[in-house]
Length: 172
Image (cartoon, rainbow, N blue to C red):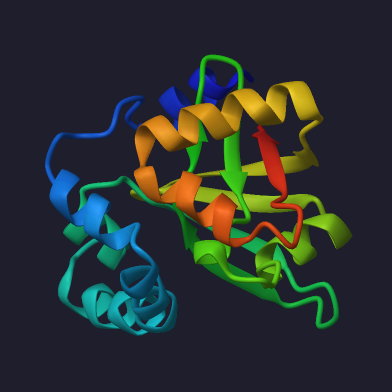
């Protein structure tokens, strides 16, 4: 499946809503991303108990549709769910290991390198996917699309300059 086909299969919107633009701009700043990196997991737990369907604080506050990606732990072999903002182009349904611009690669990306099969879910629809790291040409196109979607991606890349931000295409 192409990126757009996978998005349609999941019911994932191909364009981000206008709602939440101000929050997205503010969240892209250094202090806000530092705070969000440390608090979103906890906020997600609070929202999960309040909302009837599985969602995240990012989706509610910033208006960005969020998927749940369940990887297999590289060391433990246990399921590890994480909420991510994917980048969808006509060709690629991608996830980026920006980790809010932190110096460390997020655990979910390390898990995908060790076990590339995962479960992708959006609003109750799920599909088993296979992740592959993108090469430079396609990776650059996805990074450009990511910066257009959310200004924080470009800033995250600059802050994470000491490491390679992994970009994975997910195929169903």
